[in-house]
Image (cartoon, rainbow, N blue to C red; front, side):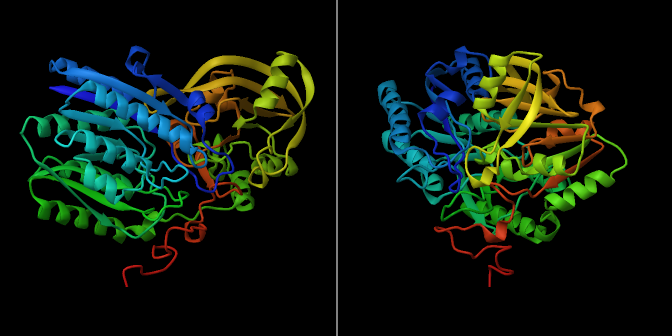
Length: 483
């Protein structure tokens, strides 16, 4: 057996002011066929798992490009085409292969390409018509017809926060191995749930739903079940929630399972659709809370959803209220990082923070700060895997600790503060720029968690996202999209 593997991913926010170009991928991670020679990181974890599993079976492994960027606006067309063409050139040069495994996102949009993943998978299929083609997807994907028609296997992470990437990568390899060796004959079908909402999995009812979905796998011909939550801020004709079933040689069973799963999810929609307080109401709740740490999630300034991560709305309001005992971050502000590094640890200076990327970032804040710590090469955990933070700075102003960096990333874990020396147990308020992924790391230490519908690039108002390519036939935009 010969296996070919590659990775290409970013999540496209069609409404973000920042294009995704080569610099974004360089800041993220690019390997030209040698990712598994370096230590495991979040984006390259699946490639390590696939190589180890294939080599244990004595398979030949051909490794191609691994390129990944933090979510932003649409990818620049020549950048996407160059990455795609590099993968295809490597596939041609490899000769016949039995298995192709791709670690993707599923919501990557480029200039001229609404469906980058579908385009790539279809091009691989044209070069390898008989190969088993499997793709690992983020659940915030647009599950498209082109992807369904050309892939043999599509597997999405089950958890949101996405703490199960290694497990789902291992699942995909097992499914591909069995299909390539003739043990199974996978058939895929999906079901359109006609809804767009956020569905975090740690809490009920999603916790029980995901557990039951996983328990159903490997029973009665069901090989794999996935939920594509969809990425709400991707302006795409197929954006929205879909249920996906892979069954062994039985298309009717696959359709039945996808329909059953999707209808069960639809029936839970009112329980899943959370009331998220606006900034004023959230801060009222936080100030009334008896003890901390109270984690406040700046949901609309989440770099992981394409926001700049330099919005000042929450911090400005907390300052106006005279709130203290605050740790907040991660602010993406390379200019402020540079100024603080020049000043050095212990320096006190006037610093203009944030508000640099446009109206969705708010106005900059002019603060008198002291530089408490400078650090390079730090990482924070996302699930079990490390995520880089770049050059980091801890500054303090009047009882408020602010973490700033020069590599856009959301706040996944308390390590983002603790590795700089900030003791979160001694702060009443911890403000994190993240929509949901922060919960895996912060829930264990929080006295309470308050998600906040702040102003910004990815406000969680799902009924009123200004789509141009997707019709409004979805809940909660209309009450009954099936009518």
